Length: 80
Image (cartoon, rainbow, N blue to C red; front, side, top):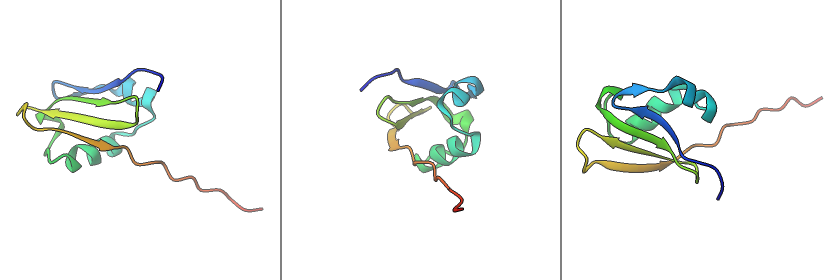
């Protein structure tokens, strides 16, 4: 695997420039955070897009670390 992990949230703040770099929308990030069982971004200490495509979320309760695979984007093509 190549590349570096990209920090998406730090201490409850979304890092918009990093989301753009990772090609992830805020809606997608919020969906992943909810899937991790965390109610809001303010409760997230750290969210990272790992090199393998998983997004790891550490919430205020450090024991609550979860990892989920990022969903693939759907590609819609027009037939001519």
